[in-house]
Image (cartoon, rainbow, N blue to C red; front, top):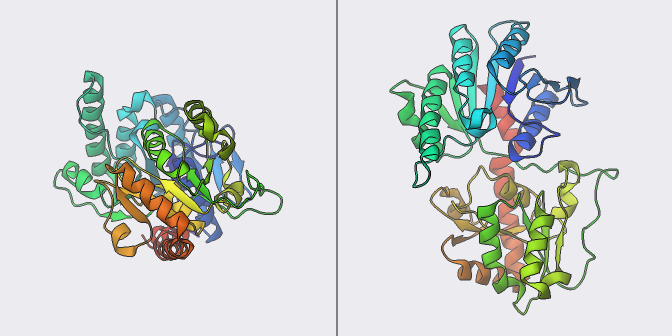
Length: 376
């Protein structure tokens, strides 16, 4: 049995993509026979039914917290393998926790094996407040420190590799793509929620996500061409923030009120029944669909057709596989037309759904993540 220590800024009961991802991977590794310790800002120390041991020692990742965390890690036999779920905004200090990066570098010099799972690399330079420029600069210093400490780097999308490589400063560090699996757990009879809406002859279009400003704006821009079409579909909004988004949506479009429903936050154990209630998913992203989008992975794993956007981060596999219907992010009319076409054409919708499910099984199932981490 091997021992793996996972450092994450969030873990359930925290809500978020990194929390869901970390728990799913930790539990899958534990089922495969690995000894898994998750170090996070959890409420209490516990051993879950899956065998994953959760430790709250990191606190807020401040220097005193890191000293305590280091002392706890030193109780384990060296060298320790430490996998960091890296999102720069997750570790406090207004996303500029250089202390944490230096602490990891010190652990590496002492002999521990540091690996990074990069969900997001750093803030992009773009016009805006001077504060954002300062944060972007500090993020790059943090990246240089981390890449100097890491023996292995995993990335959620291949698009991150060329962004990270210059900050290795010529050092040879292996960077590999580790696709993000679905956050959906198959619901049991005890945990499954019934459909959020009463089945009817009307098709049901869904959106799953957290309803952040950028995605929500894209979604709302595309909805009139779909909801006001002759298909007259029902809209099911799934995920944390969906109820707030629904309230704003029907306030601006009162004629939709009877056809727009929201679930609010749904735990992974009960998510499958909500996703499977939908006939089609609308998943626009400002940078395009990528393999790091857990919401898209969830829709594919449910075996439902997805209409989504292509953008500057979209990997070639999405076009090559035919697993989703891709429309350029700058074309909201084309997006709505593609969705309406699938609502009218049941056979084509089924074909896209099957292609998506095959791609998910072939490339994104958590078993592939477990195999890669165990072989490393």
